[in-house]
Length: 220
Image (cartoon, rainbow, N blue to C red; front, side):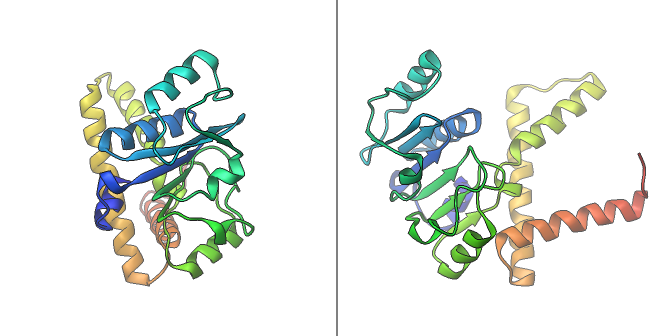
């Protein structure tokens, strides 16, 4: 996420973030961007959403959800619905909970510069077409944006296989390097074929699977 914003010449102090879904993915994304210097202006969970253009106190929100298991009753901003939160102005919008929340009905109303898909399949095909036609939103597809969890699971498998374990710092270092390489590969594929970032990520992923199958053959 940070590298995309840097590519767009958007400094952290001018970055506002809205996150739909304040669970494992959403809260960690909020904390990472907050520590980078961005302002978290909206968060939500299944009970509703909070919007504060001056910034949500993230530490208070994390403490509140840890104690109450939800954001219901949190008074750190204006109470809005999850649907309303998606249409609030921000630099980065992260749908990090449910699939199919960005639809043909609200895609034209989005007021973000970057749409980062933290959830699986949060954008419908119809919405995808609208966002592409708009041309003013950088979309980071789920297959790339939320791949960190799968990568770390792969790291765990490797460590267990070797009975050799890395430090937290080593895990994050390897993860960041792998994500940076993936971003670069997707960007190169996008330029090569003149397609969307989502299509580029899918083309790259499918081609690598096909190449592996061709070299190794089919196996159980």
